Image 1: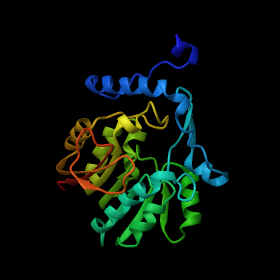
Image 2: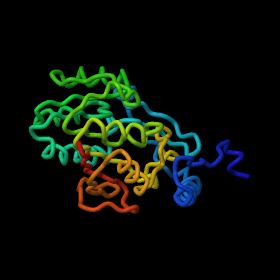
Image 3: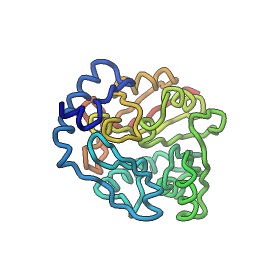
Image 4: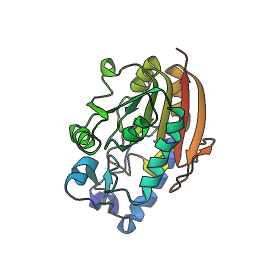
Amino acid sequence: MDRVAFGQMPPRFDTAPPWFRVLLRLEDAALYTLRNHLPTQAHLHGDDEATADYALNERLGIYAAERMVPGGNASPYMVQHASRYLWAMDICRGKQVVDLGSGDGYGTLLLSWVARSAVGFDVSEEAVAAARRRYPGVEYRVVDLSDQTVIPEAEIGVCFEVVEHVPHAERILYSFGQRFRRLLLSMPNPIVGGSHINPHHVNDWPLSTLRAHLRRAGATHIRGYHQGLYSWRIRRGATALHPFWLLDVSFER
């Protein structure tokens, strides 16, 4: 069998509900068939490469980054990624804000231009060191979001492209509900960015599961938005078929 010869068994998608696993397995089989035509996406150098933290997806033969680095692995996704922070800036104007999973730190910098205060948190010491070096004057902290005791209260939490990276993300969402009045969240549809594509991703939740965990965390209102596969535009509405989901979540405090 070709799959056995390639040395990589199909992923299990343990975090996804059974009905969604079927779709993910079908897509994985299609990508596996086309693997020789997929881009490697490994075009960084020096410090940028270390900050982005590339990992090889051995099954598909491509490299996938854990975080976006402006000027490094920006490619077609940088405008899309930055537009999420531009969307958040108006909401965060004059507020106390924490950027959860701040990565390279450019998003925290943008938020600091309009927020009353903005602090960036990331688990990577390399990413935080790079952010402090590139954007002096903005506060960045090395923080493991799974440690609920170190997340301070704030008016707004901004959490873009993080939920899919952390195990037991439902616990983290619950801690967010205890500390923030409002949460701005984004997550890729696993169909376009699941664990079978990016080795850094561990959660393959469909939108319905994400919404359910937010409600259990105390969300009283969830407003949905979406982006296309390569589009910077953020549009109202979020369905299971949209490539990228953005949610504006209110918690009762």
